[in-house]
Image (tube, rainbow, N blue to C red):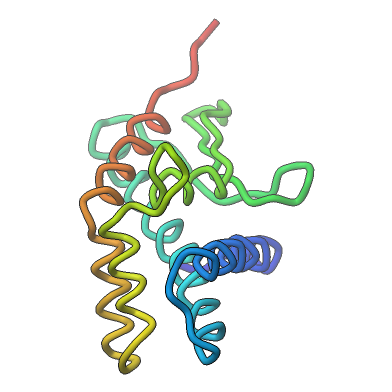
Length: 160
């Protein structure tokens, strides 16, 4: 999925935020910061990029199409925003909250399978890092979190 020139830098900044958080929690060597930045940005772009078309497809199949995209809030922070038929504004969700909700526990710690996959992505080849990233994105906590987010965003706005 491609993002607008306005939104992409804000999503990359969210990835950088994740990378800083990873630096504080993973076992990191002096050579790892560039890879951590790449991992953080990949997480942000891939999770948001996968959610939008999936959300629209599920809505279409349920018979109530909606439009979903990433916009910037009044502070310039990225947020997922939905619109229902007739351009009725739907649910919005800050991307930072989305990413934290998918990757972190309620206590603010990385979900163990996510943490293990990301730690594994630091060592080894680019191919091993890519496989570890995919394992992270497919981990049960991330998939459960995506389902919960989709349920929330698929709730139509109240008509009154």
